[in-house]
Length: 204
Image (cartoon, rainbow, N blue to C red; front, side, top):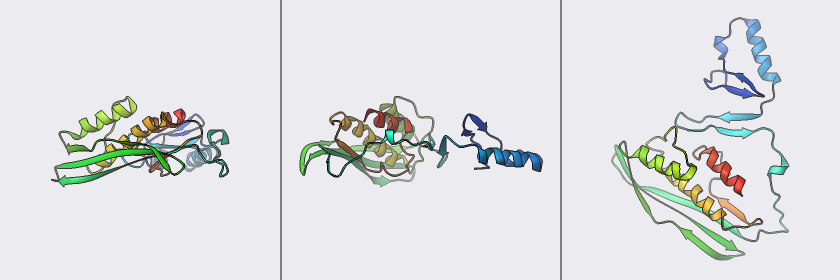
């Protein structure tokens, strides 16, 4: 944390100085005490340089933001969304991959609806990677990405974005007491833009 080049936000106080830039023991002590005395409103975790957004964890969670699921009151319907991707050919300078996402809606133990996207083949190379990711990112968020995944991570990122876009469509078919299950949603992953997840959660 001390050597981070990114500002640390704490109650409106921006502490963007590195510890080794502080001159004198007394000033260093005051700086550390300020950090320890201030309660952070949130924590930001930046996993790697190619992540567009840091994972933001709010420290002041409220029960009002959660809905209690009672075992005695099962959901009317349960929907699930997942996807898969695999590498067809890897030529080092390019990757031919395939991906598909799908979902289903259950009522009890009966599948009432299935949603399956067509199998999508993608050619990932230096010439095509940024255009592929930009297209998917704009479809998902309405914004042009500020950073791009690495070549090795690109196929998985495209699939994950497709999964969350499908989740948004499936959500429109559900009612208040229904439940939507999204693979990987309980993992602290930073591969999905925070704004996309927030918009889906707000709609739910």
